Length: 354
Image (cartoon, rainbow, N blue to C red; front, top):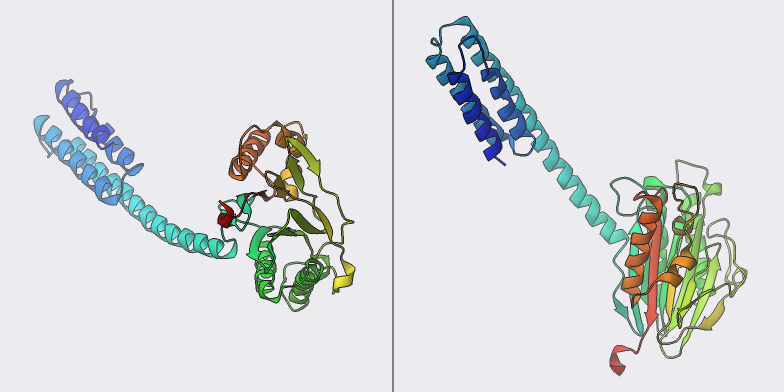
């Protein structure tokens, strides 16, 4: 890339010397440091600026000497503009370094909050994708997490009302409560009550200062995929129902009456009902947030999730998760206006059986 401004300096100098003295091309030398600043750092920009000034001095010597007012003005102008361009490039470099530091810290924090799901947990293979609506963010108000209990792989997927930093904070509270409950071996309904009460307590004690805490809630699914039998249990707290893919057919799992979203009020285990369904080897389970099914194309049509899952021809949870992410972006034209999280799990023989 540096060949471009260097070539400009040489070409302009040669042409200026060969053209009549009443035609001045040397002012175009300022293009060299200006172009350099667009792709190189302050040091390279300053060096090219110095070379441009040297070229201007040589042109002046060959065309009547440096004592003429015209050449003095050209040299002085080139010096000033080269210095300004170099200074702006230096300021941009400093800002970029600070921005890189901030982004690295933010990415580390986001990784701690929304840890990547394990590729395999017991008899399950797991894949996930996340599209954040907040510009520059990796996560938002959608969440997922998985823990191992004494008899199952337990997974939660949820969607916090709202967007931005407040929603991320709420998501961190729920994920922390979910992970912290793993050692207690609670039932699915007890976990749902625990998560809802943790959110309600957090909001009642100043967890949300940007909105009315009584308007805050989280829709969520809590799922147990049992280790020793081809069954799974589910509690639905106002969340879109998952899809089960079996033998190429897609089934919507509305197996239990949905409970209200988490955090609307303090609750007990009896306020929730769990349903069970067969989850056999070779089955795929698609969990998602409403950012996926409410995404619109340019005509206003919603993303047809079940239809697109049925059209998938790949193999394995990772293939399906990536297919849905790419297909969603094609549907929306590359932009999402709400967070969209997807988790795909497949039951396979456990590692001890393979």
